[in-house]
Image 1: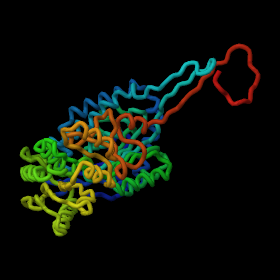
Image 2: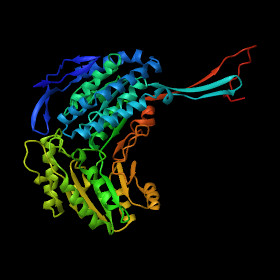
Image 3: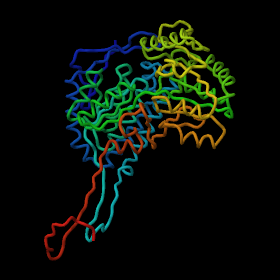
Image 4: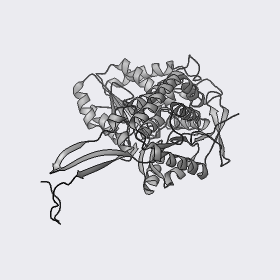
Amino acid sequence: MRSIEHWIDGKPAEPLSGRTASVWNPATGQPQATVPLAGSAEVDTAVAAAAQAWHSWRETSLTARTKVLFAFRDLVERHTDDLARMITAEHGKVLDDARGEVTRGREVIDFACGIPQLLKGSYSDQVSTAVDSYTFRQSLGVCAGITPFNFPVMVPMWMHPIAIACGNTFILKPSERDPSPSNLIAELYAEAGLPAGVFNVVHGDKEAVDRLLDHPDIAAVSFVGSTPVARYVHQRASASGKRVQALGGAKNHAVVLPDADLADAARQITAAAYGSAGQRCMAISAVVAVGSAADELVALLTEQARRVRVGPGDAESSEMGPVITAEARDRITGYVTRAAEAGVSLVVDGRETPTRDGFFVGPTLFDTVSTDAEVYRDEVFGPVLVVVRADSFDDAVRIVNASEYGNGVALFTGSGAAVRRFTRAVTVGMVGVNVPVPVPMAYHSFGGWKNSLFGDTHVHGPEGVNFYTRGKVVTTRWPSGSPSAVSLSFPTTS
């Protein structure tokens, strides 16, 4: 059985707590490794290493920082397949999906490589007689990232490349369910020339998380996960004086109008609902079919769902892999069973997937679902798609806006007028137009509204740079000539 280690101060670190967890192969249902679960001692060691490294890294020139980032970017690109195979082995998603995850993460490194331009301040000459003023941004110190299982490479890359580029040091607490990619990332950073202690990986569960949230030497915490945990992270870390961005859950809708290309919409929604077995915070999990679009759309979605090939993520024939754990499988099928028993129309039953040893749930489709139904309200986080029928455009907008979540939404239509009305009316942070998964590029910021985000700042992009730095304004005067009389009046420009 392979043993995974922490990465602290530029090298593998022996576990101290004595607690471990199994890392499973979701396609076989068998354990494949053990991962240590850190206690306070390991976290404190990592924080001490990161705090020590910050004193020199913060003073490292922008040229030297970007040299490391360009080298790191090149190494990530060269090791894309290695990272993808690790993701597939521990998460279960198919290899093409895993490669896509690495590519989208690498785009954030691309953005971070432009940090000299992103950190440029402003200068105002002669704001008063012989007085000038300028601004610049400085790093915060030790930053922490607490990330979920569903994107073990991409989501951490929303955080650490920008934090490090801005002059911070970083401690990553990845999901203990698929921890191996984070250790390879640490090795690639070291190979790229990043000094020891600037990037650290501490594996663990709630005990490690709580210590990160409470530690007085951590300046900022970034989190992605479920809404209850995001709220908890935001409240606890804020109470200890930290800057916090905590992204929560989602119930992403796709609104389909009668004038849409229904065949294309069905294909796009199927991919967005069942890709990565629905374990995406930007997955489409609810369709709002408007008016006459409904019957034909449901027929097309049914046909597409039944075509999806389910199997191990490393099999070339597979389009959708297993879910992450046996507990996840049982939770998802529990939602399906309760909804069916409550009389919700079950069109495609993912419980009927041929028996395998792993944690498989097939594509599932419900029709004519009430917005009061549990399977609609909750974030199922699996390959379960529900169709809600709406009489009009305005009804569809009301349905979207009534959701407690506001992460992503898509509109399928051929009407520019409808698009303009929709994009202005919905209370959602990211909107796609005939695009089912509107994840922004790295030079825009990612984040939702309502219970999908706790904190004021979205991740990566310009808001990510602002989150990992704080501004400073300097006013300068160089006196010359004879001294002037002392004035106790409030200073004004002249």
